Every structure is written in structure tokens, then in C-alpha cells.
Amino acid sequence: MAGRVMHAVQYGSCGGGPSDLKYVEVPVPAPKKDEILIKVEAAGLSPIDWKIQQGMLKPMFPKGLPQIPGTDVAGEIVVVGSSVKNFKAGDKVVAMIHFSIGGGLAEFLVTKANMAVIRPAEISAEHGAGLPAAGLMAHQALTDSAGIKLDGTGKPVNVLITGASSGVGHYAVQLAKLGNTHVTATCAPEHIEVVKSLGADEVVDCTTPDGAALKSPSGKKYDVVIHCAAATTWSTFEPHLASNGKIYDVNPTLSSIKTYTLKKLTFSKKQMIPVLLSLKVENLEILVKLMKEGKIKTLIDSKYSLSKPEDAWAKNVDHENALGKIIVEP
Image (cartoon, rainbow, N blue to C red; front, side, top):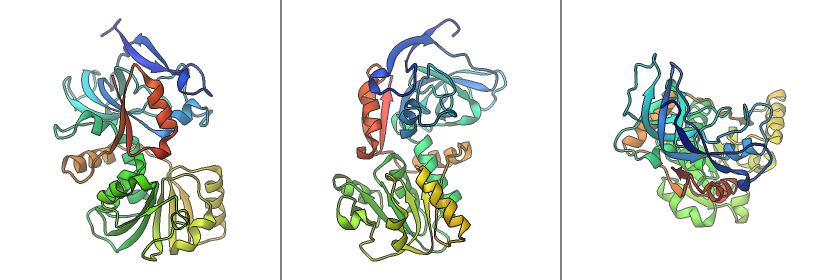
């Protein structure tokens, strides 16, 4: 496909907003020997995408400018690199791209072959595109960090999931209920019934005094908190934690990192632990298998056209009011 051009969305500087996204023509990228070229059918937006555009993660991200944002896609492989043996042209895949590189908001993208998994026919492109960043974060926080077994074995665990209707949160509810857990969830009042349908044992309106205080309606103390909502003080969490309760913060702030350090230094049994996403393709394979089996699903908040990215980007910036994932389609 050398010499061909494609449509993509990009920005040329950090610090801007939705209006700084431009729908442009750029060359179709060529895969290296260990890479694959994917024709994008759907891309999922994540909060980290606009944070990178805002310059919040400098100097790590973005790696260079102009930047084509987006890290989560589903599509069809059109070219494989010379050393790629496990994929072929025509394979449908779910794939991810490293945050430092991006490239998802385009008609075609290149990624490492070891960052993609086969997408079964049972999974649509839009549902698959929602999985990578949000699903992997939920899976990592629950399993690698909190040690919850998704086969239902293990001791009973009381889990609180804040921001349970968010991208990470809605996957976290579904995954947690595969374990031996009692799940309390918080979300906006308009999303309560949907979060209940995902399997949460009790759902609290986060706009009420009890919801803001994170109180369990049944009076339970939390062994594990998967914190997917906006920054919350330690003093709000602490009264509701079990004696060894741990908070896993999937959106760590400077304040939560300070709390983590303080609790470590004082040997506190109750802790707040920042979770930094590790892109593991084996975990993505687990998620795709669970979705194929109908054990988890992607809630789609809204869909937008690649040619008109401003509305999708504005919705992503206001992601705390979203229900599930925001999808962009070429």
C-alpha cells in the first residue's frame, strides 16, 4: 500500500481542546517486519487520550507531534510484516497501540503483532474496540493487584467499585462478579439500573450524602476498592475499609500517590495503591474469550464518525457522565 493516503484525526500541539483536532489526509503507514497493518473498523476512546493532548503526561507522552490519538481498535489485517507468523491478511482482530505512539483515529494503523488478538465472529468491531485499555485496567486491578480469582474460587471479598458506569468501571463490575465477591457500586442516578443489570449486588447514587460518603447500604466494610471515579480523599474511604482494606486507584493523582507513600512508610494495613496499566496481550486474550462466552459485554455510550471528531472528543473530556465506552468509526 506504499504511496496511498488515508484519512486520520490529528493534533499538532498539546494544550488545546476538541477544536484542535483536524481531519486530515496522511500516508498509510507501512508495517515493519514484526508489525501488522490494520484497516480500522472501530476505535474506542479513553480518558488518557485527551489527557495526552492536554499535555498532562509530558514529557512521557506524546512521543512526537503531530499526533494521531487513540490506542484501542478493532479491524481487519490487510498486511503482515515478514516475520509475523500468527496472523494473516483478512484476520479480524482487537488490537492496542502504546500510548506514546497512538494512531487509532485513522482508517489504517500499524501496531506490533504481539499487541493484537483474533476477534471471534461473535464480537462486533464496536464492542471489541471498547476492550483494550478499559478492560485491561479493570482486569489488572482486580486480578494482578487485588488477587481476585475470576473462576469463583477464593475467599469471599467485599468489593466497592466507584464510577461503576465508566469505561473501566463497567468492566470491573462484570469481572468482579465472576469471582467470589459481593459488589457495591457507585454511579450517577441515571445509570443505576444499568449497573444493577451488570451484576452489582448493591448500587448507590453517588449524588446522595450516603453515596458521596461511599457507605454500603448493607453496612459492609470493603476489602477491596476499585476506584474509577474522580479523586476522593483518604478520609472518605478510610471509615468504610476492612482492617486490611486496599484501594486500587486506576486514575492516580499526585494526592493519591502521596497517600500511598505515607501508608507504606507508616506500615498501615489499610492502603491506597496506584494502578498503572500494563499492556499484556495474554490478558486481552482472556477478555476476548470472556466476551465471546457472553460473560462480559461492552456498554456503548455513543458512536461518532471519524470525519467529525470534535463531538466525540468533547464527550471523552466529559467522560465522568458517560455510560461505558465512546466509539469512533471511519
